[in-house]
Image (cartoon, rainbow over all chains, first blue to last red; front, side, top):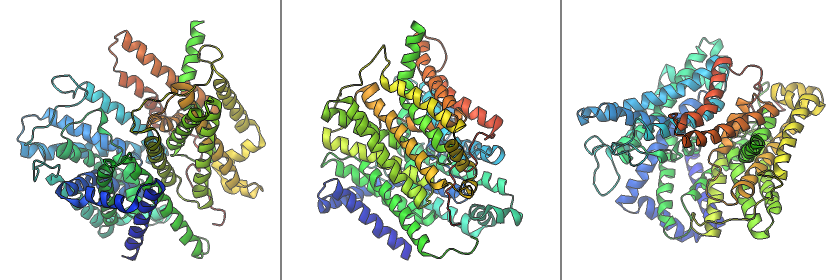
Length: 337
Length: 291
């Protein structure tokens, strides 16, 4: 709890600092941010809808990073998730909506998992770091997206590089047709709880964390390290792919050339500032979701765009890293460690 | 003659990525992976444009761009080397910082994104050829020789393979990594600045469009050797230009396949031979002297 409070105060300070450095009236801007993120039901809907892919991708990132698999391919897995979801939607068109919707999510998960699995396989069997291979895979995912929406998955009218809009009854139900809020926004909460249970209450989760903390110790105690690393990547990709699927079936309903909105990259700071902990990630995902939602409101009053949030994220991460290094340097190092 | 002009044109368009990739090859050989390359290039783009627009000289613009990139490189090495923080975490932060910073500054100074600006470009010698492209060839040749043949090059390579040995031999692995980070940032800065004042003569938010990440991928493709990396960057540039020709002739090859080809080839090489002996063993592993 003390750590959460510390991070929260730090984040608030970073937001204020960035507003001030960019020459904005701090008090007024904070009010605009708050109103855009939580002022009315539309603001709250925006916050939850923005937070959904952030939390999913960030959960995917912590599952991999906790096993020391530096998956930075969340972006590619998100895109592949969206493409696979759209593919399922096109292949099973006419299926009962109640079946098609979950099937889209399963397709997105499988697509993301296999895509990340390739990177996992390369590290486990070929010694190629996940960092390197996921950079390549992010590029390839964008080309797959562009091929899919101009070729096999393009809308029937062939007018624009995008898929057909999902029929309303296949998409997640909306509470109010005026706002973007859909039933799917509860999924990140469920996913965070499940990842928490998996990481801390099961043997598999314990092994995963052990491999990340001390690979040698894990090996000596008989943990099949490659299998655990592979599993971490599959789960990570499934979560990032699901992010793409939920955005497709919940909020956007259509996959186009601009489907990649950097959520996979933006989720990395979310995961770090959430302390690589599933419940922390839920909080930081909601915080940054709110910040993105609020910055859209802020942008209507001045020339700034939501990219100012990127600066806030970056400064917060560097401050966090610096603070941790400072704490480490004050702590006496254990002998031989 | 046509072939020569084509070669120069490819060099011209591939130069931003090629600069960044050659610098990244040097950095990675010392054990430093710079995920923030995209951001470093973007910051250089913005400040090169700004410098060229305010002073009217593209050369001062280039200088501004490189200086901005160097500043970012120093900040980055403070975190990754002095604090031994995770290179991937810091690099990701640098990317977001650069994208946010340049977009915000650009909007604040030039109004809403979308307003077209155009600045003085680097003068040409012959066709698309200019002095910066000659510098690119010289850099690739110099660093290929430096890494393979000099004593300091050996120290750099050792810092990426087995830093303890570097320290035991009386050199500093940290300082080798620091200078390689700086070289990487400077070359990425040259690449970014050239993109703004050499190729487009303009700036747009996020204009590097993945070139920094492409450079990292090309280092893998070129097996961590500066000369091969340059060749790989040119090949990628060529395959991009071929794609337009093929589309013009209306051939039934999906353009995406051609665009993805370099990445697919790089991935295929990794699948078949893996890291081999080319990839530095301590790549992306922070070095702590007092462990």
